[in-house]
Length: 142
Image (cartoon, rainbow, N blue to C red):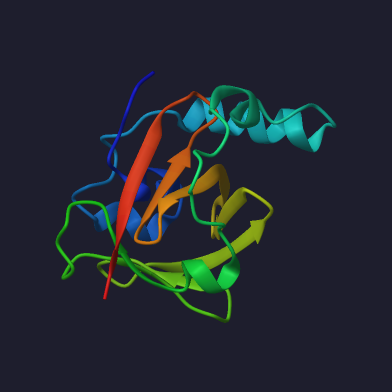
């Protein structure tokens, strides 16, 4: 399984994020587009089949849990911020909407949306499992 430490890989389709120097290193865009299309057409979400069940002792992911600042590289000056009103902001001023539906976290921007399965192995960490099986990891900034 391919592992990526990029929450922002999920957000690569939002045009305002193109300025972020951490963008573009990830793949999986085509796999996610295909997965989203298949899901919209009534197919099963491939991401659900790729990831293991949440580990014992993992934290339940709720909207309230996600609200706050998260970093991919342990630099709390470089974060994505999830707001309680369902908006997000990334470095450089990019913004969009986020929606949590069970374990499915969807980011919506001007050019479309991107969905991944989200899990929290600890109260201060999240994993985003892409349709292609790659995993992004982020930690909470306090």
